[in-house]
Length: 345
Ligand SMILES: Nc1ncnc2c1ncn2[C@@H]1O[C@H](COP(=O)(O)OP(=O)(O)OP(=O)(O)O)[C@@H](O)[C@H]1O
Ligand SMILES: [Mg+2]
View 1 (cartoon, rainbow, N blue to C red):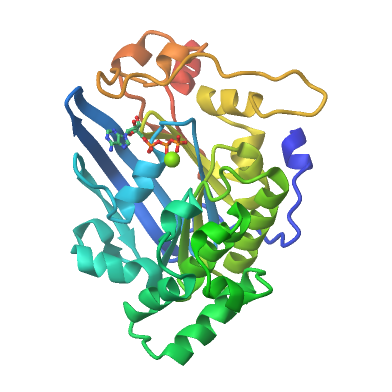
View 2: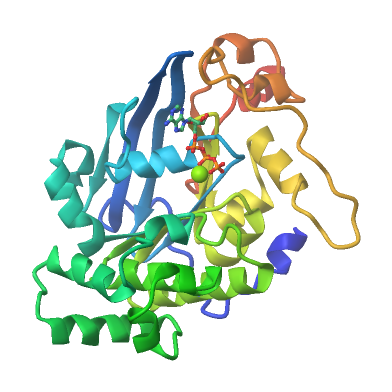
């Protein structure tokens, strides 16, 4: 399709296989389930999510606003707070289940092994602490305390993200930075301790288009250069096409399809993925909007959560939760349609 043809991957490398066994697996999330117990009822935010990230690959997570992307990530990182609770599942990182770790153990892992780039850089930066002190705090938590070393490493980290006058930034405060600069500082902090895995939750929201591309190019370079892996949350399939090896599509707190970017964008199997692809803006063509809304996550629907918006919905969709269908390529989707086609033969 046109999106794939337009795809530019200056650092293009062979896409890692999806079914290459678990040897290259860095993160394996299985059955992840998170609920929020609110006065209005139990919010089914994340409902049995399964996906994986292999070593040295960039995996995109896409889906409409409210479909559970951030809660999934926050669950993995141990950042869900009451009234939210992870009620089931595992998230094995390098063989260790993150969900079974104590808060202090997780905090040590965040930063050192996993770098987190949050959606809003200003919420990630402390407004009343000089940037230098914020770097010092991160390093102190991981045993680096000498002031000279802190400054040297912070300077290097800021230079790596393209900041020309690092000392001026280190001696200032967050409010003195533009959005793009603040996000560069947050990226430098996330990369500071050389993590093997980076999680970025919509890292360019609120930035103008040119800066968005610069920041995404920068993150990709830092990930690729060091053979890191990354989970990149975005609602933009164009970003997925350009920056990711594989993609996980979420709907109503579930994964409804995943596979290599090439397979999923060229031949999307789930009607929701098909609708998302149709809705990608294309120059010179009229905009196609997604119709309908996400279902109520308190009164969660039976069967397939997409059925109310699905042009192909038929009887079993209302009653039976679709099982996974996996293609030989590893592309996997959760939909009843193939069975119907099979039965119709
Ligand atoms: N603290 C909370 N209390 C109650 N419900 C919550 C809370 N945080 C998240 N939710 C609910 O969980 C669901 C998933 O939210 P989440 O933030 O993961 O969506 P998202 O896919 O990241 O959306 P966006 O693209 O807008 O960032 C939403 O319905 C949201 O209202
Ligand atoms: Mg979010």
